Length: 378
Image (cartoon, rainbow, N blue to C red; front, side, top):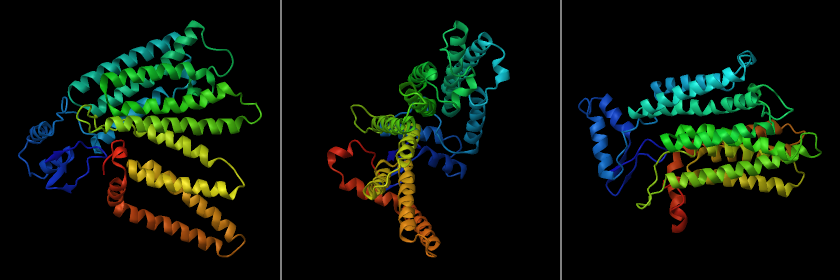
């Protein structure tokens, strides 16, 4: 018998008389009174010991339950209050007061996160630790304002940090990345990669503004291409992290936790969005774009990351719509062609939902053995 945590890899399957059991399966069995009350935790620990992957403190599974919905809802409201919804009225307290509030608030969050982690409540601990990291740019901005180190020009409002591209935010972003790295080292909760991914996304845009001013000829094209390559670097970083966390090497086993999700999501959206924004009159380039998006669909199946599949499907559908507009231009058949493409995409989605695991297994079997070590098994 094999055990697996509640991750994308923890799917139920049958092979050579073995099954894969998730922690959620034991909880479901307990709720249905298939297990004696209070035995799910003990049985999970026993199975984890047999599999050689004893959980430290039996951390709480990252399941999508109503309790976890409340966790994330409350956490996102608190994070939004400290970031997106920071008002100018709050800034009138002055930099010294803002610095004190941010430091005290973050310290309380860190203390609460450590206490919750000690009680194996990993999800709320990760959310509070993330809130502490999200307060770091506010504290850094207030400190720079207090010491007179804020560069001249640009906005004087911290609320613009999340809405305005400006190279002056670079210090805030670098300090936030350092704080997030320390938090990850201390707590090892996957949700902490969310501020890392968003900060890297901001960093890419602000670095482009540092290199080329907004009023420079060709600035928009440079920003677009810079965003595309920076997004690609984020995707490669996510792949490296994903490979390490999924490693089955007994000498260096992975944590089996999904630290790469947010990096994959924002990196791919940045890369694909910038790539799709490129305008060209070359039919060969448009066909290459469609072929690349088709490759994203396959790559999503191999990596078991749906963000690649979704972006690729939109790219292919967009190219098919372009072809329909060219072929049926000024024709009564144009709406019919678009409807047919939409229905074809829906049918493809239904087929994919039914055969996703079989396709992943078939692709896995056809990969060279040396490459399988870098990719997640189906």
